Image (cartoon, rainbow, N blue to C red; front, side, top):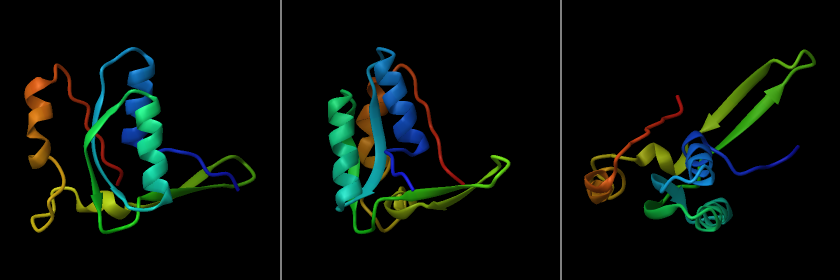
Length: 112
């Protein structure tokens, strides 16, 4: 088994930053090793992560299972990101409204 950084939004943010874009990310992560590793990755890639909230839940994860034919099944555990825009939590889009006022392009994603 191998473990990698990931998540649709994080992967897209890293790709856009590596392509020369000025990138900011809105997400929620846990106060755990995976969350700290994600923040370190984003800092190293030059991604603005000031709108990433630390939530009271673990950082989300996914497990990808491959069969002998190469077909996959993905198990998604949304973790902290499941709380984005939850009415009783202080994380998500509203506290990051300043980002939308300054951006020229917005890319949104959400794992099902």
